Image (tube, rainbow, N blue to C red):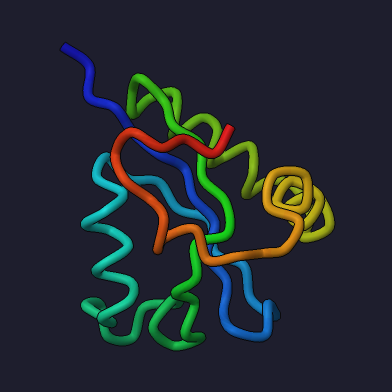
Amino acid sequence: MKKEAFVYILTNYHHTVLYTGVTSNLSLRLQQHKTGSFKGAFTSKYNATQLVYYEHFESIEDAIRREKQIKAGSRQRKIELINRLNPDWKDLSEKYDDKTQCD
């Protein structure tokens, strides 16, 4: 049985930083980012705690491929991706649950 996975993009309050990540448990991972569980990590250092984009995948392998594709793109392409699905850059983590998808 394959494990589901997510690719996500976080930003900080002023939207000056974008962080792209992958996880098999988005709720837990968001909690870790918001509480600063990983001191010294990029998201802790730049306070990137707002979920502005995510995609759901049926397998971690597919999610990792997509993460690499997003990371290889320019900042502008990431902004366009976010704007297409979340034009107001609202923090989606407040409304996220395991059945909600942003695609």
